Amino acid sequence: MKLTLGITSCTPEWQLLLSQIGVPSSTVDLSAASDLSHLPSIIVSSKLTASEKLNALEYLSSGGTILTEADTAQILFSIKTRFQHVRYIEPQFDDIFQTVRSGFFDGKLKLPKDATHLMSDSGQSLIQTVRHGDGVALILPGGFISGVLDSSVRRRSFSTAGPIFPSERVSRRSKGVIRTVVEKSLQFLFGERQLPLVTLSPFPDGASTVFNFRIDTDFSSEDDVKRLYDLCRQHSITATWFVETASAARWIKLYAQMEDQEMGLHCFKHRVFASFSKNQKNVWRGLDLLTGERIHPEGFAAPFGLWSQSLSKAVEHHGFTYSSEFALDYDNLPFYPFLGERFSTVLQVPVHPISTSSLRNAHHSLEDIKAYFDFVIAAHTQYRLPLFFYDHPSNANLDALNWLFERIGDRSIQQMTLADYSRWWIERSATKWTPFLEDGKIRTERSRHPASLNVQIHRGVHEWAVTEMKDEIDLSDLSFRHEAAAATESPMSVRSAYTWKMMVNDMLHNYWKFRL
Image (cartoon, rainbow, N blue to C red; front, top):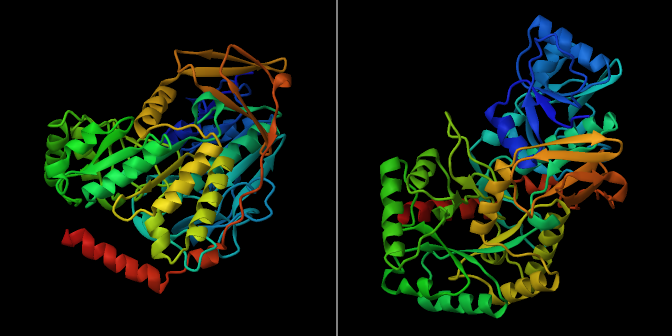
């Protein structure tokens, strides 16, 4: 059987998510009278006509599976719905979504009234299961998927055992949680048909994660930069440096002299402007200083982690391969941002937004900082997320970073620069492939792809394996791992509170954003 997912309309939000997940898909015309039984599952992402509804229900009756949102499910199944503002998601004792992390949504959703999966802050479940004939459908809240296109920003707290939660201004919605909910939904629906869900691995060579240390150099002294560079060299860390060029103009050649490091651009002036022309000029002035030292950066990271469409288009204008702003997304897999009428040509690479200075600002001791990063390393490895940490030379805790680099080395976690990972991800995204299940074996037809590309094979929501992409994969030869429950974090009711410390940090953020 062909293991390609069907979708009625590949809208921008679905295109973004399916590319991140790495699941092969094809557009399906539900109005046609053709047999749909060859499709393991269908995402119904568009409004249905009467004939399309009949064909979808016939597909379900014969044992098919469907993923849709509440708006469409009203037409398809005549379910009852209601609107509700959902602040956060906190899965509890859920047989489908127990491995999904807690996260923020902070928006109005259309909820299926008889939902029984995925708990929200009000105690109301968000996802409904509908069985029709021999088939089953999962109904997501209306407006849930489009959350991945949201670009608004909020200050958020991050779970820690320290005295005060560290916080940062990041994307309002936890988009990695939205992606994981979709991923789990597809694993469940394929599993209902006794079929494996086969997706592209997010990391090369079967790794569970990869590590990069990102450095934003704004207002750092030459000595600050030298000390952090020496520490990286001591631990064989190939870091990615995003250079703020105005304050370093007199000694910027230092960056050209560094060995085994990646250089990116942070800015000339540490500002993000409202207009394309001002952002474009700021990027150009920063590039001019770097290229004068024969540094040709592939990556860009905006001041304060901010993102906007005008900035994104300015970064495009200068031909960058990738960009990285946690105000657009964090703790997630790469994607191309949607700019309203098209996708950007610049890949967005999310990073973890909490640095050692964030933790010190939240009154964390060295031992608290170690415990925090130990938790993040374990959690990101469990959820198959990159370990992309960042800091600043001017206020980094070198003792904590020395410990962190030793930890990464002790665990033999693969290192990649953000440029290397971006180039690999672009090749991954360009791979055209189709998996088939035949007599307990997965056969793949594919175009040219990176030699390091692996596939993940999911048996329902609880078991998965990773293996090299090849012509034929015998499922009986694989060692399947059991999916662990979500890591224990602080309750969302506590994390979602806006505290006096967050208010002070927001005031300081706004002061420096316009003062510099």
